[in-house]
Image: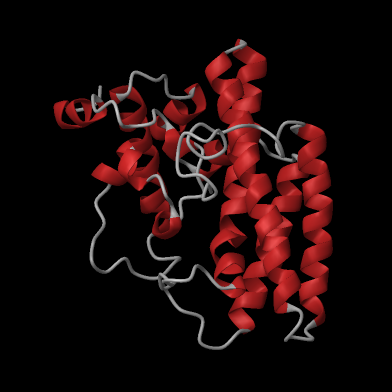
Length: 243
């Protein structure tokens, strides 16, 4: 059960319940942080470390915190999230979507993007917040790992929805697919701009892979491109700035 501090904060009527499930996790540019329970409560240390620092522990902490936020707002955590918290082993993490073609495509893109980033010079450990918005490289960098994690979550929640008929799991699957679609689209646009100044053939190769990935995602989750996320796409947040 969520602690009393979270439950008290969750009582604020200005909050959008579960909005943290429908975002791209890029709080620096999000217009809805004041209406997000996770942002209000998540500890943000001064030194976050490198982007790959402590990934397993960070994932476990994030899943646990997500469960607490959902419970504090009276929302049911997905069953697969609870199972992952009970058994965070790599075998269990991969069991729900092992061999899934869509997830394999997403993993391949992550591998291509990571290899490209590792060959670049002066890649920052933490992206700076830019007053005029992120640069194309920032966008490519931010989303290159988010795509596969959101697609994996969409697949797992879709599996749960098929098994249980649960509407919460179905929504979680569709909204995760929606965020993945946004990440794919913005990554493709960022790479398109990057290609204007960089003749590296891998950029076009990654764009081609994203095109295939987008097509497969839309076939599996037809609402991915058009699903309306409360606060971001329905006009109840900050107009024109939804993420």
